[in-house]
Length: 115
Image (tube, rainbow, N blue to C red; front, side, top):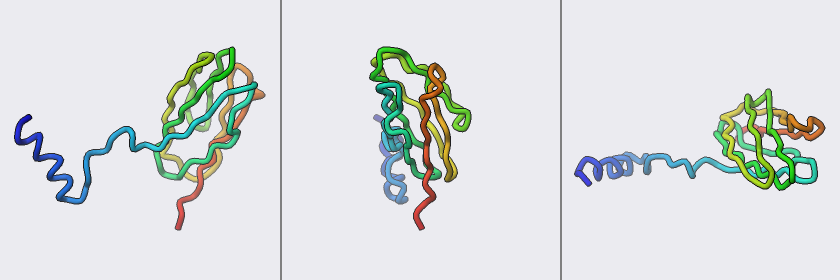
Protein backbone atom coordinates (compact mmCIF):
# COMPACT_ATOMS: atom_id res chain seq x y z
CA UNK A 1 0.00 0.00 0.00
CA UNK A 2 1.40 3.42 -0.90
CA UNK A 3 1.85 6.24 1.58
CA UNK A 4 -1.00 8.21 -0.05
CA UNK A 5 -3.39 5.31 0.60
CA UNK A 6 -2.42 5.35 4.25
CA UNK A 7 -2.73 9.13 4.54
CA UNK A 8 -6.42 9.33 3.49
CA UNK A 9 -7.93 7.59 6.56
CA UNK A 10 -5.55 9.49 8.86
CA UNK A 11 -6.53 12.82 7.30
CA UNK A 12 -10.25 12.05 7.62
CA UNK A 13 -9.80 11.05 11.25
CA UNK A 14 -7.74 14.16 12.05
CA UNK A 15 -10.38 16.41 10.51
CA UNK A 16 -13.10 14.76 12.56
CA UNK A 17 -14.68 13.18 9.52
CA UNK A 18 -14.16 9.62 10.68
CA UNK A 19 -13.62 7.06 7.98
CA UNK A 20 -15.23 7.24 4.54
CA UNK A 21 -18.92 6.21 4.62
CA UNK A 22 -19.69 2.54 4.14
CA UNK A 23 -22.85 1.01 2.67
CA UNK A 24 -23.44 -0.81 5.98
CA UNK A 25 -24.10 2.56 7.67
CA UNK A 26 -27.43 2.88 5.81
CA UNK A 27 -30.24 1.89 8.21
CA UNK A 28 -32.10 -1.25 7.17
CA UNK A 29 -35.77 -2.14 7.66
CA UNK A 30 -37.31 -5.59 7.10
CA UNK A 31 -40.59 -6.01 5.23
CA UNK A 32 -42.05 -9.53 4.96
CA UNK A 33 -44.64 -10.80 2.50
CA UNK A 34 -46.57 -13.62 4.15
CA UNK A 35 -50.14 -14.95 4.03
CA UNK A 36 -51.10 -12.45 1.30
CA UNK A 37 -50.10 -9.40 3.34
CA UNK A 38 -47.15 -7.15 4.14
CA UNK A 39 -45.75 -7.29 7.64
CA UNK A 40 -45.56 -4.74 9.07
CA UNK A 41 -48.32 -2.98 7.12
CA UNK A 42 -46.84 0.35 8.26
CA UNK A 43 -43.10 0.71 8.17
CA UNK A 44 -41.72 3.77 10.02
CA UNK A 45 -38.48 5.32 8.75
CA UNK A 46 -36.62 8.49 9.73
CA UNK A 47 -36.98 11.66 7.64
CA UNK A 48 -34.18 12.86 5.38
CA UNK A 49 -32.39 9.50 5.57
CA UNK A 50 -31.65 6.91 2.89
CA UNK A 51 -33.03 3.54 4.01
CA UNK A 52 -32.39 0.00 2.81
CA UNK A 53 -35.60 -2.07 2.61
CA UNK A 54 -35.04 -5.81 2.86
CA UNK A 55 -38.19 -7.29 1.31
CA UNK A 56 -38.58 -11.02 2.00
CA UNK A 57 -41.26 -13.11 0.32
CA UNK A 58 -42.16 -16.13 2.45
CA UNK A 59 -45.02 -17.05 0.11
CA UNK A 60 -45.20 -19.70 -2.60
CA UNK A 61 -46.01 -17.13 -5.32
CA UNK A 62 -43.96 -14.19 -6.58
CA UNK A 63 -44.98 -10.69 -5.53
CA UNK A 64 -44.24 -7.29 -7.01
CA UNK A 65 -43.39 -4.52 -4.57
CA UNK A 66 -44.62 -1.37 -6.28
CA UNK A 67 -45.01 2.23 -5.17
CA UNK A 68 -45.88 5.20 -7.31
CA UNK A 69 -45.14 7.43 -4.30
CA UNK A 70 -41.63 5.99 -3.90
CA UNK A 71 -40.98 5.42 -7.63
CA UNK A 72 -40.07 1.76 -7.02
CA UNK A 73 -41.10 -1.49 -8.69
CA UNK A 74 -39.42 -4.85 -8.19
CA UNK A 75 -40.49 -8.49 -8.42
CA UNK A 76 -39.80 -10.52 -5.28
CA UNK A 77 -39.64 -14.21 -6.25
CA UNK A 78 -41.23 -16.80 -3.97
CA UNK A 79 -39.08 -17.78 -0.97
CA UNK A 80 -36.47 -15.09 -1.61
CA UNK A 81 -35.40 -11.60 -0.61
CA UNK A 82 -34.60 -8.39 -2.52
CA UNK A 83 -33.08 -5.10 -1.43
CA UNK A 84 -34.59 -1.73 -2.36
CA UNK A 85 -33.21 1.67 -1.37
CA UNK A 86 -35.60 4.54 -0.65
CA UNK A 87 -35.12 8.13 0.40
CA UNK A 88 -34.12 10.44 1.70
CA UNK A 89 -37.82 11.29 2.16
CA UNK A 90 -39.76 14.18 3.61
CA UNK A 91 -42.20 13.47 6.47
CA UNK A 92 -45.44 11.89 5.26
CA UNK A 93 -47.08 8.63 4.21
CA UNK A 94 -45.99 6.74 1.09
CA UNK A 95 -48.19 3.91 -0.23
CA UNK A 96 -46.88 0.61 -1.60
CA UNK A 97 -48.68 -2.49 -2.87
CA UNK A 98 -48.27 -5.88 -4.51
CA UNK A 99 -48.99 -5.31 -8.20
CA UNK A 100 -49.88 -9.02 -8.59
CA UNK A 101 -52.50 -8.74 -5.80
CA UNK A 102 -53.42 -5.09 -5.32
CA UNK A 103 -55.46 -5.83 -2.19
CA UNK A 104 -52.06 -6.24 -0.48
CA UNK A 105 -51.11 -2.71 0.54
CA UNK A 106 -48.94 -0.95 3.06
CA UNK A 107 -47.40 2.37 3.97
CA UNK A 108 -43.96 3.79 4.58
CA UNK A 109 -44.47 6.36 7.33
CA UNK A 110 -41.73 8.98 7.49
CA UNK A 111 -41.52 10.52 10.92
CA UNK A 112 -40.55 14.18 11.30
CA UNK A 113 -37.05 14.72 12.70
CA UNK A 114 -36.81 15.00 16.48
CA UNK A 115 -36.34 18.55 17.75
